[in-house]
Amino acid sequence: MNSKGVIILLFVAVLSLSAKAQLSTTQKATPEQIANEEAAIYKNAAEWAASLQLNDAEKEQRIKALITTHLKAVHDWHYSHSYETVPAGINPATGKPLGPLDRQLIASSAMPGSVHETLMTGLRKDLTEQQVEQILDKYTKDKLASTLAKYKMIVPDLTAEEEKVILANLKQAREQSIDYKTVKLVIEIFEIYRTKNEQYLISKGRNWPQLYKKYIDIVEPPKETAKKR
Image (tube, rainbow, N blue to C red):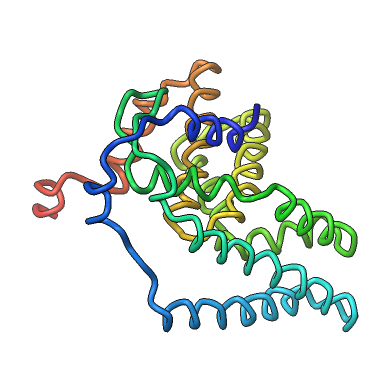
C-alpha cells in the first residue's frame, strides 16, 4: 500500500474528541487571500508552461490548461476540506494525538486520485520525462535537488546504489506532494520518504544518528563555539 493509502486508512482509525477544543485553532482564508491565490494559479501555470520553451503554442496552451486545472482543484479541495473535517484522535503508529497539520494532511489526501492522474497523463502525453520533472520541480520549488544534496553532505561516501534508492524515494515524494497546497504539507510528505531513506541507509550498515549529528555539528556549531570564533 502506498503512503497516500496509509494516510486515508488513518482517517478511518482516528477517534472523535471535542470539537470545541479545536475551534480555537481554526484558520480561515479571507476572500482577498483566496482571490490572490487564484490569480497566482493562472500566473504560475503560464510561467511554468513557458519555462519549457516548447516552441509550440498549442502544446504550451495544453500544458498551461492542465496545470491550471490541477492547481485549482488542489486549491478548492484544501479550502473545502479543512482539518476540522477529520475527527481528532491519535496516530495509531505513534500513539500521539493528531494535531491540526496531521488532520489537514489526512483531509487533503482524500482528494480524488483522478485529479492527479489527469495532470500526469496529460503532461506525459505532450512532454518528455525530463520536461515532466521540470514541471514537478516547479510545483515543489526544487525540493528534490536540495534534499538530495543534503543527503550527499550527510553521507559523503554515498554509493551509486544508495543514491539510486534515495533518488527514487525522493521522486515519489515530489510527485505525491504536488497534490498538497501548503509548504508545510509538502514538507510532511517529504518527511514520509525521509524516514524511508533513513531506514534504508541503516539497513545498509550506515550509522545514521552519528552521521546526522556530525552534519549538524558542521552546519550548526554550538553557540558557545560560535561565540569564540
